[in-house]
Structures are given as structure tokens and as C-alpha cells.
Length: 126
Image 1: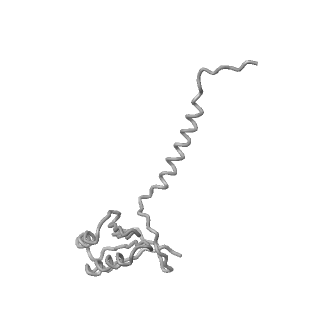
Image 2: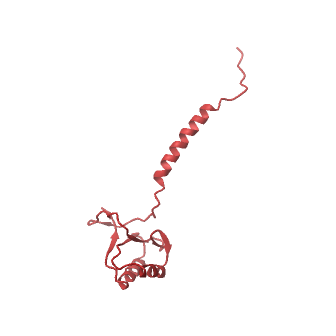
Image 3: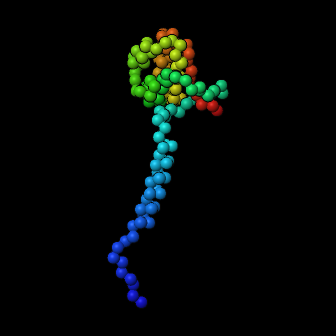
């Protein structure tokens, strides 16, 4: 019995498999990229869902980084940006539970000095 010699390789099944894998990767990648700054929120029993409205978000990460609406900033820049807003503007504070309390106090102090009253501290429900 003599074996048949192949002159070419049929790549069509390989291409079919690669296209299926490409579709799977692109589909799952759209779920992974959410555009949210990852912060491990503290838990609270009185946590409620945020309503969808134009809210200014200040984020304090565990590394000490500050974000003003997803843009890296400093305490001084936050103070300048808040000076341009109305004191009734809703402000949401996301603070990582491992962040230094000093950073949180500085942000609250800035908000108090600027007379902001519509504040919320974001937590996750237990």
C-alpha cells in the first residue's frame, strides 16, 4: 500500500476556525472594556442606586491618585474646577476603602469651603 502525496495544504478549515475565534474575541472584548476607573468601594447598608443625571464624580484611589470626572488631577485643580460650578451641582465621591483617610478629608474640606451641599459618597451594598 502506497501513501498518497499531498502537494498543497487545505487552509479553508483553518481560516474558518480563526474567523470564529475572532468573532468570540471581539464579542467578549466589548464587555470587558467598560471605561470605568476600578475602585474597591466600601460597603454600606443604606446604599441606594444612583440616578442617571449629570453628576460630578471625584474618585480617590488607594494609591492616592485623584480623578475629577475620570481625569487625573490634584487637590488644587479640584478646587479650581469646583469654583466654576454651581454649589447645587450633585457631586459623587468614590473613595477606595484602602485609600488614606487624609485624602478623603482634604476633598471633603474643599467641598465644604466651596459651600457644596449636594454630596454623595458611593458605596456598594453588603
